[in-house]
Length: 115
Length: 115
Image (tube, rainbow over all chains, first blue to last red; front, top):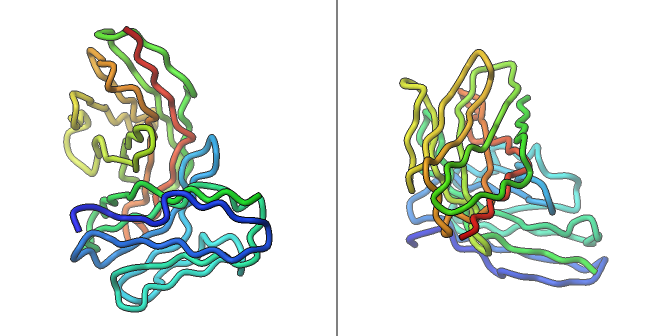
């Protein structure tokens, strides 16, 4: 598509529930990224995919967080047993993956609220 | 690791007045530098970037920034703002090399333009 698309735009859930957030990157972009933006802060890196594989998942805060990209396009961020501290805007970005200065294009984000 | 400090959390400014948003960074390696803008309920949009070459970088919407290596700064300026420039602005850096996808963001500066 023309831009990075994220769904849902807003998600309200209860503590302990399971949540999935979806990202559809720019067509042809091989690299995909998830960032998390907590209230009053800048975005923080979570995970980077090159194709279907997670090339760097060092930013995932704990094992409740998991992400997949099975066909090298759409990605899903999965959060198990949600906690109130998981409330944030989850941003997805993509790039063409060429070496030499990756420039990321971000989606509008999925705002997650855990009650 | 890199860190970014945006020295002003909020900047009120009158329409047609100039604005400067200050950004300082810390890094043990050479970095690329970016400014992103986030309009209400929208994703992060790249304003400009410094990769190499001339230290004065021009971006979209009349913004420019100057990279000062000795002062580790990358301040953003616009000579005359419009109401539509009301938004949150984020400075970010990434390490040059294989991990250049790992952006470190500042906490953001909220610019409010008043008539």
